[in-house]
Amino acid sequence: MADITVMGAGSWGTAMAVLFADSGHKVTLWAYLDSEVEALTRDRENEKLPGAKIPDTIEITSDMGKALSRTDICIMAVPSNAVRSAASSMKPYVDGSFKIVNAAKGIDEKTLMRLSQVVEEELSGTPVSVISGPSHAEEVVNFIPTAIVIGSHTKEDAQYLQHNLMSRTFRVYISPDMTGIEIGAALKNVVALAAGIADGLGCGDNTKAALITRGMAEISRLGMAMGGKAETFSGLTGMGDLIVTCGSMHSRNRRAGILIGQGHEPAEAVKSIGQVVEGVNCAKAALRLSEKYSVEMPIVQKTNEILFSGLSPREAMDSLMLRDPKIENPLIPFDR
Image (cartoon, rainbow, N blue to C red):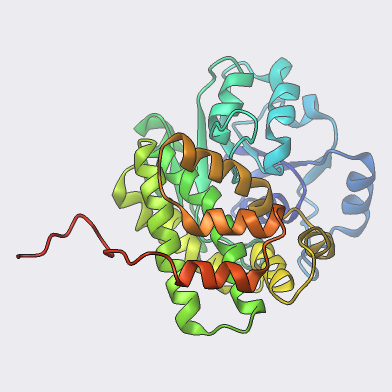
């Protein structure tokens, strides 16, 4: 058994804390605000995960020094836009004695760095692993079987984390392709917004399947241009995570997209969700990456125009459907 600290008491952080405590690990849950600590300690429940009890064995604190003392594994589950500040705050307590795993999904908008790179930059090169895959907190916290993938710089680190984090309801695969894992994890949120917008417009299963498939083509093209491996994008953190995020009402990105498709202003839609909608945070960065690497990403482009330039969802859909004719896969040649 390991001592595990989960940084971030949102839905995903809380779900992982409950999951790992159930497996017999000693778990500390760190929350940013004292008021969060007070409410979670008093109620032993996160309002974002109604009905799921936080075991009394989980210590909840806002004291970062206390949370990181005598820990073996630190899992960062803060929102993507708080990853840099959280990593910076961890500096005094990071001495190489524990493994760091980033669970946030996104791209740093200012630098276009992957989030593991952001953490490593703040922590002077301390190696960071990543965890991702189709894993709604609402299901993980209720012990519904889930499979994810952990990416690490070394096989030794990956296997250590796999051994400690895998359980009867949480199957862990490992991979060295951190780039592919993180790009798949971040950009699927943008495509899920687009899928939700299509749902809000009243489109059907055909449209959803097309958006998932062509969205995956965009993610794969960019990910491989950045050094990711093609096989990763057909795996759990690629197609697996994209399917679940585009198809489930647990998905904040899909729910926000539905509201936008129904005619709500993007800012109003995001506010009504009441939690961070990571696809909005990632959309601009995804578009800039497509420009930097000269990768065509029409779904990402039109989603940005809806979010930030006032393009109507219906106009965006028409524009995507009426683009110049294309070959589905240019790597497959005709015989003649």
